[in-house]
Image 1 (spheres, one colour):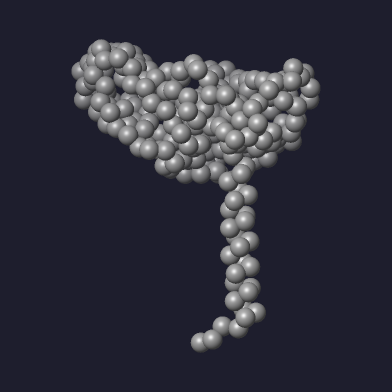
Image 2 (cartoon, helix red, strand yellow):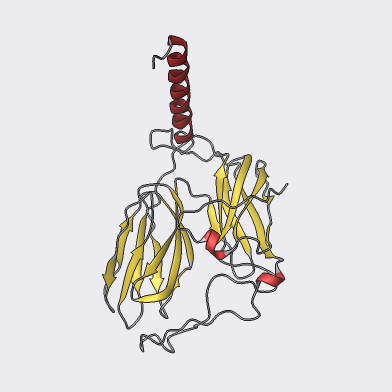
Length: 274
């Protein structure tokens, strides 16, 4: 079947438009070739608190992890699940980060290392963030062996044993990847979550659900709060010169653990907050 010149032109136009849009999406991520970030002195913070309202989705007591397969883990620490369940209606271990709104600049890679420890046969912290190219230092404070196994998709997956008393394992992630799990192949209850971002504007909520994202230039930002069991929520914050912005998030348990624990973050339907 012959294709007319008009039809062929229309097909080529659609393909060219698709390629163009694909390039535009890639350009949303800051590049090392962008001009360097230079604070102007009028930066401010985004602060807030993470609440939980879904009483029906919350068990009366945290689940207890069965550590009996390794005698060295028994009695080594708290065996309650560390998913970030609520205390007084607040959520800890929620990862909050700026999704969009930042200027097109490149951010220096911090010289400081981000530490992920294995203590009491669990990862500490449960959730962490670091910048692309920043060093992740993984320690083993236990008197037993572990097997560290990050499972990213955009970055290279690796799996390395770490003996009791062994020095830190140091690795870097070169690609932006919002959230992916880290597990220990020797202790199946152990789990942590890592986010790799091209900028330093992220935080993790504490025991009281509070968080602070520091040092943002004035502007309007899309901010995401993610919890491993309850999915993600999106909000907007307007940062004015030298004036902190407040942005609270609320989870109701509508996102199931199966939906949110798929490795790299798949956004749940957003709850947009004013």
